[in-house]
Length: 355
Ligand code: ADP
Ligand code: MG
Image (cartoon, rainbow, N blue to C red; front, side, top):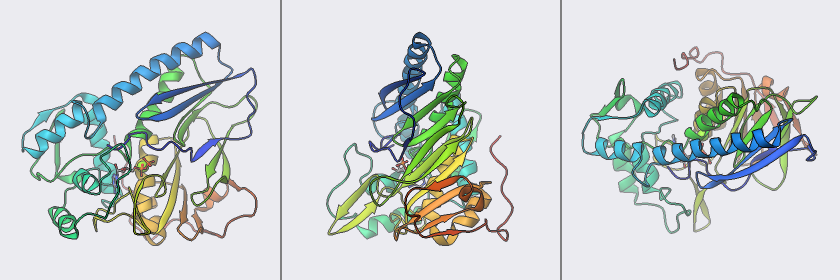
C-alpha cells in the first residue's frame, strides 16, 4: 500500500496546548511517515518504554501489510491471489480482511481495497508521487470490467482465496485507522491513559488533557491553517481523507490517490472528508468511501456505515456536515459556506458492524 500511514503534512494537529511539564512528546518514523505520540501526566520512563514497544509493534504491522514492498503477509497473499492459490495468513490479517469485507458492503463498494491493480496502474504503488500522463483509458476500462471486489474474497478462518484473479489487496485506505486504535490500546495497557497518537494528521485519543478534553484542529484542504477545531473525547479517532495529499499532476489536472472503483478514475468533487468514531478502522474506511461518494451521495453512505459525525469539504470550499458534527466543530476565523444536513433517512438502514 502506498505509505500505510501516508502524508507528511498534518491535516490535524493538537492546538492550543503549550508544552508544559505534564505533556510528553515523541515522534516516530514508521510506515514512511512521522507519527507523533503525545501523553499527558505520564512519567518520563513509563512513556519512553511504552513508545519504544509501540514503535516495534507498528514496524511489524508495516512489514506485514505493505501491498507492494518486501515479503510480508500481504505481498505473499497478493501473489497467491494472482496465481489463483489459496493461502493461510496470520490471524490479524484475516481479521482485518473480514472487517474490510463489511466496510466494502456497507459503502456499496465505494471503499474497495480489492482494487490494488487500479491503484498500481495510476502509479500510487511507489514512494514518490507519480508523474506523466494518466494511464491508458483502455487499461483502466479493462480493470473496471474485471470488477475486483471484497465479495470475491473467500475467507475461511485464516485461509484466503478468490476466484477473481483481478483481486489485489491494498489496505492503504483503512489499516492506518486500525493501527492507530491498536496504538492507543497498547499505550493504555502500559499505563499511559491520556494520549494522542497522530499519524500525518489522522489520530486517536485516550483520556483528557488534564482538566479539559484534547483539542485538535482540522487543516483546511485548500489552504494553510485550520478550518475547524474540535474536542476529541476519550477513545475517539478523527480520520481525514484528502485528495490534496497524494496526487499525480499532469497538464494542469490533479489526479488524486483516491480512486472511484466504479469508473476507475480518481475522485474530483471532494477535497476532504473527516469522520469521527471510536473505531479508527471504520472511520478511515469511511473517510475514503465518503470522498468517493461526494456531496451528492455521502449522506446515504454515512447512514449505511452507521456514522453520525461526518464533515466533507468540496472542491469549491463549501462544507457539508451532519447536525451532530456541527455541534462538535468550531470554525476558525470567518466561517466557510456550509450546509448542515441530517443523514438520508430514506436510505436503507445501517448494515451491522463487523463482529
Ligand atoms: P490517506 O491515506 O491519505 O489518509 P485514504 O485513507 O483515503 O487517504 O487512503 C488512500 C489510499 O487508499 C490510496 O493511496 C490507495 O492506496 C487506497 N485507495 C484508493 N482508492 C480506494 C478506494 N476506493 N477504496 C479503498 N482503497 C482505496
Ligand atoms: Mg481512509
